[in-house]
Amino acid sequence: MKAQTVTIVGMGRLGASIGMALKQSSLKLTVIGNDRDGSLTRQAEAVGAVDEIKRNLGRAVAAADILVLAVPFVELEETLQIVGDSVQEHTLVLDLSGLKGPGLAWAQKYMRQGHYVGGSLVLAASALADGRSDTELADPSLFQNSVFCVTPSVDVEPAAVETAVNFGRLIGALPYFVDMVEYDNLVQGTETLPGLMAAALFGTVHKSTGWRDMLRFAGLPFALTTLPLTTGADIARLALNDKEATLHWLNVLMEEMQQVRQWVYEGEEELLTARLEGLQLERDRWLRERTKNDWLEEKGPDLSQASFTGHLFGGLTRVRGEDKG
Image (cartoon, rainbow, N blue to C red):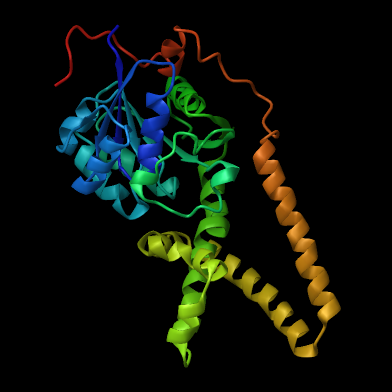
């Protein structure tokens, strides 16, 4: 059997890190990279994330046994529309974009064949405070001892799910199955809400008198809190995808801020301090749990075995008599 081929569309830090992890694995895989931004593909090639760059998206997709879509959510529909006719019958299409419900609907609309599985790679705990997204900072350990959320549709073939799960294990992430509707709702609290908070915070400072001096002295807390603005287009699309869920989270946030405001107004230092210290303890506990990653008990396969290639591709592979073009 010839070397299996993984095509990664999207050569930001996420896509390049996946490529590096695959290249450093024990399996013989050919990794193809593609991005509409040629500078990113060159950077990915420079850091050793890919074996080959295919600038033509259709050809890059046609070569894939596994197609990884590591593109922003705002680009997902257009990408699926372009690649839909190029996906091979046996190919697993692994969508890592922000929302799963719309991704499935677009895949069903535009893909003639292939096997679509939605998923989300959660960063390792050590990378959570590092908001950099530059391709040259790609890291093969970005997903080590972390979680791979898998959100399969009810009618997807089990072999495709198996392939997706083993793909996540190959780059260091253990599987966690989530209903896609539930996942999309949870994302509103962990992705959309921080993005809207970042906008509100920066907007508040920016329109204040003396904002230039304030920003001149702004440090790490301000920079990290406003970091989600780098994906503003995605945040807007996420927020409006499910307005009811977004409004729910905003209402809860405003209630929390109103309580804090009340304590500040009344000078309740003891209550405010207790609240902040209690939340700090909860945050520390969360980070410890993320570092241990011990809430998943299922053991993965032995990646040192040559036969794992067959398990990785979940029975979707085919023997090819000639190289792909």
